[in-house]
Length: 348
Ligand code: ISE
Image 1 (spheres, helix red, strand yellow):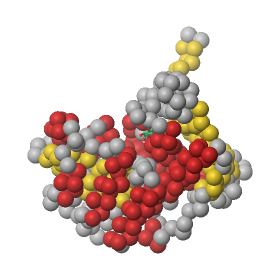
Image 2: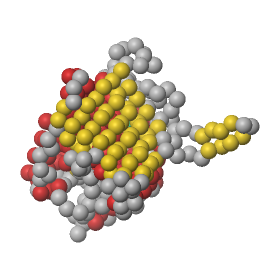
Image 3: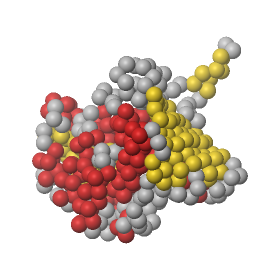
Image 4: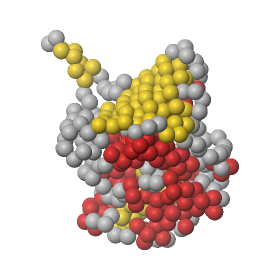
């Protein structure tokens, strides 16, 4: 049974492009919800976003104030990665459900504190924005694997290219901010945990000569005997692409890096390539918000949870150790606590 009002009042923390996308989705594509508050350190940015969400939307410059406000029922966090864990814990302390953009935190230790805070509440309150799990083409791949259409999966191959690295990118943040998606996708699609990672990187000098290892190759061994091989290149220049192939022992299933239509003319062939994740995962962002709000109304929980956030960060830290040491590193994931067991359609 729902413990929520007919219309859930959501507070958005962070009025950048991701906050704006979720605010627009909630305001136009999701029933039973309203954007009731927007917080940003830059007040004018928060004001601009709030003005686009209807009348009477509150503006905050302090995340804690928004979280604690009696007029806010649930919270969306879209601020820079290093602020996520602290804000999620504030939400848990205030007893408010929270949708946190990935990564859940920037270290395993912070993610562990979130698990502890959720354990103290005794219920799942945190959804992590691993939106690929809602992407229709990723869902099809998952269904093909689950139906047995490719036999037993043995290999995951991933391609993840950003047009240009975000300002402040470091060799480690390529893993924390970008590769975390691929690590989550591999374990979600294969239903296996990562047991070993070997990562190497180069600085391509494509957009700057700052020495950042902007092209990284990740090799994984997973528990059920699968291998994975993932390219993450955050300065690809030409556009944004995410593609994958899962090879099974009797077939393969794949997502082409660019899913747009192909045009052939004047002895040339061409297709449009998306500029960024907001374009490529447009549908997924709507589906994940619809699902989150629907679940809150119904008292369900089906999204990627804090456990998924924690495990993905354990894998990221293992990758960072490998990148820094130059050798393969092993990883042991502890048993999943009972709180995170149970059927969840999108989650498992
Ligand atoms: C960005 O923050 C995202 O979350 C995108 O989905 C990802 O593809 C990109 O690499 C990240 O920088």
